Figure 1 (tube, rainbow, N blue to C red):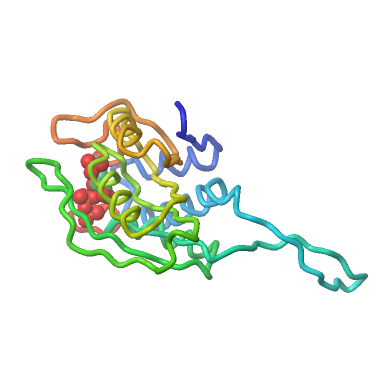
Figure 2 (cartoon, protein in one colour):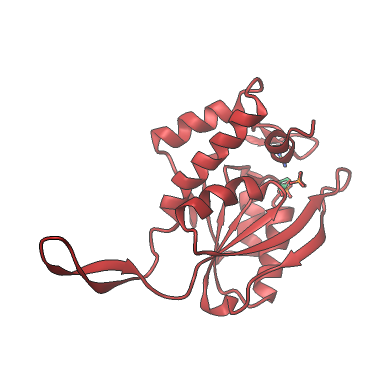
Length: 209
Ligand code: PRP
Ligand code: URA
């Protein structure tokens, strides 16, 4: 699929299977999503701009590769996005962070916004939006739209699971935004849940059900 990267690394797939298991307890689920976000973070940051800096090792001087450019921005789609955010911040502690608060209306599946706060100069920064689930994609489409309205031009979307229907809708709305996911599942059920999926990501991260 164009503009979709599935991270098929064995560690990613194994950890994802552990997360899918319904008996996996909250603490372990939270730990796993943190670990997975670091592994997905490795993939999504592949094209960060690099420069050289003169340093001195204990042996000699050298021009060593270092990250350059403006600080990266992670934008978490609340609340489940925070599960992915924490591991990414472990990886890149200096990143700027934005939050988009959205919930899915359980009847219409429409994304309803309740919060929006993002860093400035988004037009000059690489922006990575994170939310573990891309189901109908209503939430992801709305989040990307708001972030674009705030100026962002260079955007990637990271999730754990995506439904084929969601990918199609997302790509129609935002063909310029690459999706990085750990898996593409079979389909959505009548309630808009990903099948086989992992259930409600927010509830499983925070133990609210
Ligand atoms: C979940 C998930 C996504 C959304 C995906 O959030 O974290 O944001 O559903 O579904 P969609 O692709 O059909 O829009 P939810 O609305 O359950 O809110 P929560 O994170 O606050 O629990
Ligand atoms: N949101 C979730 O948390 N899980 C799904 O399967 C679909 C939307």
